[in-house]
Length: 186
Image 1 (cartoon, rainbow, N blue to C red):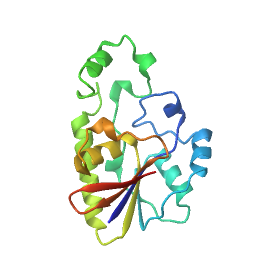
Image 2 (cartoon, rainbow, N blue to C red; image 1 turned 135 degrees about the vertical axis):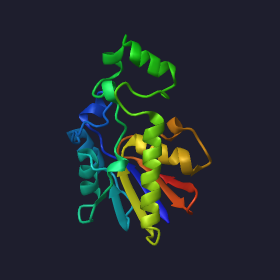
Image 3 (cartoon, rainbow, N blue to C red; image 1 turned 60 degrees about the vertical axis):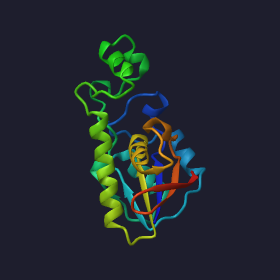
């Protein structure tokens, strides 16, 4: 089965390099213009995070297609870091501990990276199982969601941060039920 991962279009928070997880912000004008300038592969099944930035992206790319939402595909809850960027957090002891951990400790009053990644993988497993007779499934989700799933299943195996992709970009993969083979970058 062909699996397409597309990271939602650009938001104001993305432009400002803010941690935007549970904040339900829309696409910014620059993000809308950028999405309109690209061509995307068609799909049979369209699956999306319920966040507005993902739904807007899905509606722009696939205007006549039904959207199936999965709340488990939401971005990570960044807790006390939500809505802030590196400059805002500079000098914050909790932020420095998180940085020193390599991004592997729980966000203060937020989600742990391990829980987040496991949640995303479970959602992918559910979707890929439920639509296993489909020829192609497109996921319009968040960067962290894509990174979590590819870290678990992509061949060759790479670390979470190695799978980062820019807004409006992503990966086309072949899924054999246990591995995702990247065939193209979007």
